[in-house]
Amino acid sequence: MKFATLALSIAFAPLLAVSPMQAATVTQLREQYVEANFKSIDGCITTYVYVVASTSATRVSGRGGFSNIGYASIIVNQEDDPANGPECGTTTLLRTDYLELPAANVQIANGSGRASISGSGIAYNSETSESSEYTISLNWRPNSNPTNLNINYVEDYGGMIVRAVGNVRERSAVASGTVISEGINFTPRPTSDALVRSVQNATIEVTRR
Image 1 (tube, rainbow, N blue to C red):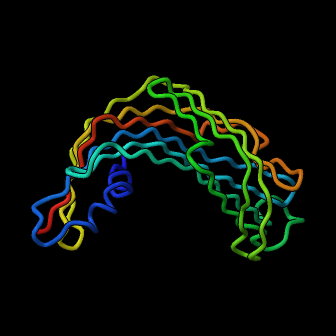
Image 2 (tube, rainbow, N blue to C red):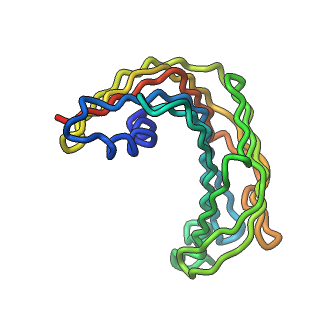
């Protein structure tokens, strides 16, 4: 479990805010998180779709109540893959589209392992700098019992000491639905390469060494 990535995602802003005279910044975190990896093949073309989404509430010590944030990120990669058959040419990247949706488009149920993302937005192709509209409708359902993890994490980032303590509940899932652009559905089949994660009562402390 790479809790380091999770911890840094919400500790980054407080880390920058720690002044030389400040003993520590303590952040409390509650987060619901999902991800899924889709892969499909159509002739010579292989399509990969990677989806992550998060809704979280954070509270920094001495700075008032909890702040709620959320997002969904979708990356669509397509390539002409010679591994798909002798008639296919050399590996050629056809598209790398990136799309982000706001928190209002993300629903992750606390504890149930179910989640959904729905909405539309503009994606940008890093290969061609072109844009295209996408419509997203994806759902997660759990396919395993939850695994409970107790996290106790310490790392030194160039003089900034990050300590994270908390409880994480994680389970594998099946993700299904549609990621559509220009009449093409890039997720035609469900994937079991998916997970749902819940972080409860995590505390992240950032101090200067």
